[in-house]
Image 1 (cartoon, rainbow, N blue to C red):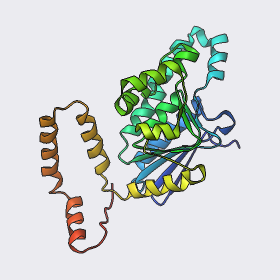
Image 2 (image 1 turned 60 degrees about the vertical axis):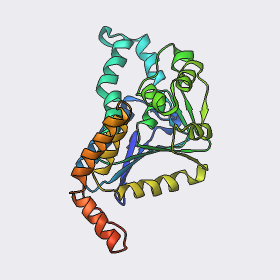
Image 3 (image 1 turned 45 degrees about the horizontal axis):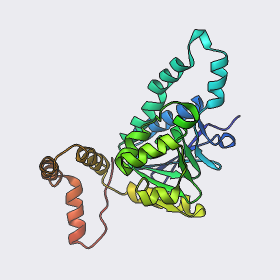
Image 4 (image 1 turned 120 degrees about the vertical axis):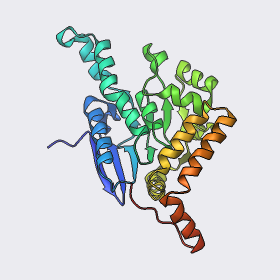
Length: 270
């Protein structure tokens, strides 16, 4: 029996999702995309899961499109379907739902980038809430200089907001590799760690986030999204409205009790 293209396991409330085509540095093959969609659905269904940790096996996190498959399809179109039509349909049915699925999960998502995050792998990594990268890892957008197409998987949406238009444009147009250390300095990712510390530190972080109040992730995501478009007055009004509702909730009551009792707060359930 062949190994699954995406491995899934749950450890102490953390779902660990691992891309598992290491001999090809984990391209976004049909099997990998199907495996990711299945993993996202499983996290939704399993209310014992409190965080998701995404990573890859081997020396690459994800190199993006399965160009070998694309080449074969270009040479031998199925049922007269152009390669562009095939890719467009695949993005609509799989790739884009993966990004949306990760960003709307009811649990925090940590990505441990263990090697190259290239092409669609760049956007996949940055769909997580928090990204930790090995020191040997790098981020790479070959779309324009190598292939004459545009970045996808939400790469530019995240990059412009994280590092600004100038840097995002240069990454897309030059195809220069961005080291994990530079990505950390620019604020594209949370942290860069020694290779042998990647998974221990990423798991520790995922477990820390798993202990958060269940609704906190969605609340923070909503505030961050709103901050991108709101005026200061609009943001202050939104914060007031959310605090007014949340302070009457179970999580705040537990946090307040823990403060009074000088203990660590314990938040339960999703």
